[in-house]
Length: 55
Length: 244
Image (cartoon, helix red, strand yellow):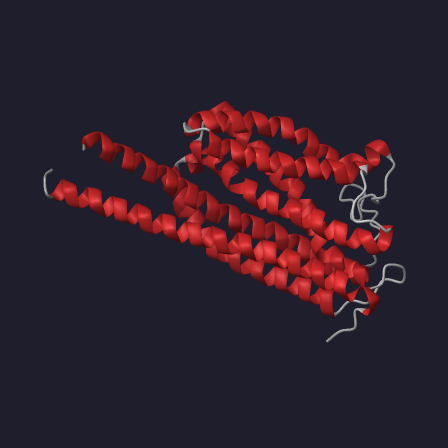
């Protein structure tokens, strides 16, 4: 491990909080994208099934 | 072929679907190389010690905080002038990314400021304009959620984006306009090329800056695709309710 000297806590805290925020944003964006894709596919399938049944 | 063709949601989804994996991989590679190089393989600064390593996150995030708002300004203007829904949705998709980048810039700046300036915060022109920019991001996102009719929300948020652009501009040029405060001027002035950062720090910094920019492109494509799908889902749900 590299020696960050007397500012080690500041540097590690800065990287930790930044990476946490950015990875959180990426994770939330991917989760919402996946959920929306599934919800839209389900809605389209429901409408198609209804049209095929003639209702 | 015209750029405006991609205002068509179908064409946008087709193109963005192809671009997304490449930008995501590019962002991951560039960010990893820039940050790992900067953190592990650069020396300490003779004055700032190891805190100089914070530059590899602080400068790229601050750069993106301002540039994301500029992108939102362009897409908002396209919405107001040409009424392309994809552009309004792209602005909406970009806002949380800009908000997080602004928060990262503020947080890393405060953490860096404490050992260097002796304080986490000062009402310095650049810091204050960045804080106001952050509040504008929050207000912009809240306004999108507060208005039920999405076209009205797009109109109102576009106007808010025009107003907030003043603070994006001030954030960028605050040290030059007021010439006072704790924060130094820009380390990498693109216009003059007279940078104050040594090569040993600049190369990983430049890679991180490009990495953050590509990360933004990847995230905005992903999030705009989600917004396009959400809009289509809302239309389908409305049709279902009407036919029921």
